[in-house]
Length: 38
Length: 489
Image (tube, rainbow over all chains, first blue to last red):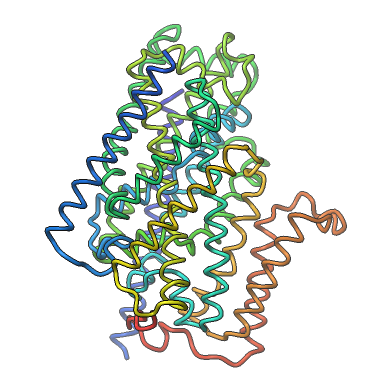
């Protein structure tokens, strides 16, 4: 019981972090590209 | 035994806080004067300090007493409370936290003066300080209830003892002191909560949690054993919580003050990878302890409020109970410290220095901040020890910051209009209060709609309409990317 709840929560945390980092990277890549174009 | 536990826990906290505070004060004397040393640690906080402080600032009484109680009623779905805070940390560390660090301001209201006007700064200073003070009384109450429930001490004495420790946690050396004590306490928290879970499992039939799982399976409540519980619960509880937190708290001074204190923007991004799991996984242990208490016939009749704490005191060895209460107290004290420091910083920076003493030195600012911390804590102890039902008004308290977050995002990236900002703030604040304290939801037949959804829609609608109607300046970062706004003090 403990491990299933632990792993579900851990998976959610890692998922949140990965999605957040990907969005952050995409936004900054676009901003960097716009600066280069300018 | 109870007095033994109490004395040992208080001594542990006192020795740790006293020695760390003394050590940092000595270090600072050797280094000499540094700008914003007390409130922002000279903007030199490293990854471990930022990570531990971010994680523990949003891990307080509701993460312990609240999850014990929620796990009893909704099972592991209660862990969405922790996951919502992880999402909040991700939003802060990858957006607003980076923006305030880049802008070089000392407080959120100071940023709003740069984006809008001194009037908006004053308005937000008063409301934000009041809103954070509401959370401070909640933490004081949680501290008092925890100490009282686990030691049998009277609530008012527990509130005073907790409040005094909370003040000492921050008043000796400011945010750097909070950071170092948090690093030590984060380690203690995990060691003791893991040890408690192992001891608990070994004392159960079969030496593991299988008997607890069997209890819920036999009673037809398998959904209590997964974080993906009933869909209606996920929609109302989990999603409602995520909306309430991420559309208000990324503008809140306590979290952003930690980001302002970081050594660089990279420090904040790196800290997220430590802060998120440290904050999010703590709830798993609390939730499993709560589920176990409900499954045991000797503790089940005690009910959700005291079953878990009573079980811990009765089933664990005294030394472990001392460590565990010490770690629970540490979690609440760390939130208490930042929720006392943040409004004190707003007062000293945005009211005292901005409007009364523009030439104030760093020493004067530190002195005023310390006095305000002590005064706020004293009032919080008074309010907290009479146990008002503060928890019921948390939705109302959080929603005050929704329009503030809108103003930051709009002011940095879209448009800045002071008249529009004032109208947005006042409209949302008035509707929030009417929605919470009158029969307005009844009249509109919207009683089941959470306060946070209504305030979010009101904020976006009013903010967008006023931005379109009033003339204004372009967003700050659209005009001059990366420029410092710390010129307005």
